[in-house]
Image (cartoon, rainbow, N blue to C red; front, top):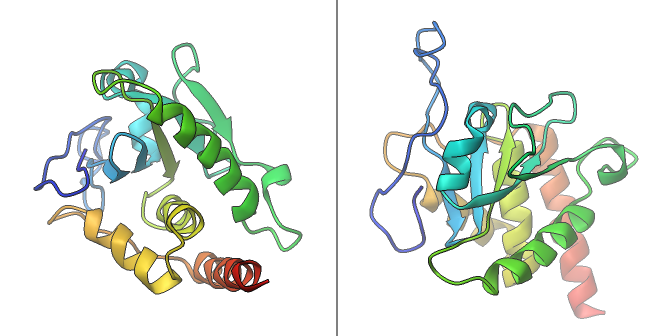
Length: 188
């Protein structure tokens, strides 16, 4: 995990493509800490070891791929899957709903001591579009960043060698809409 202001400090969790019998091409096992001791972005592969997640201080897993169930059981973690109630009529993630959930979890995490963080792992299949899009939305929502600044902030958290963020067009369009809505609400 790589935290705010830290050098490349990341921990592998889960199986890489090579470990699953694939070539490993295009798979990075680094989870990325976006907000220190709270928000972590990752890929589906990171949900395969609930024990490892718990050891890393993850207490909640937010699945941004409603068609895919997380590997973790929910025995030691709270598992939430963004579903139809978390979507806009056009099928995109309802960032207002999602950020509201994250804000409540963030308040809870700030009340814990340093030795027992309560991280939230937000993941999508590759860890490169939907999960970072949720992180960008939360940065705009919680820190009142512009879309451009939030994207830059999230991208800067990714360690060297990681494939990084590559937003799908629909995720970027939804973020642009969310940015306009936030700015309109701030000026109203």
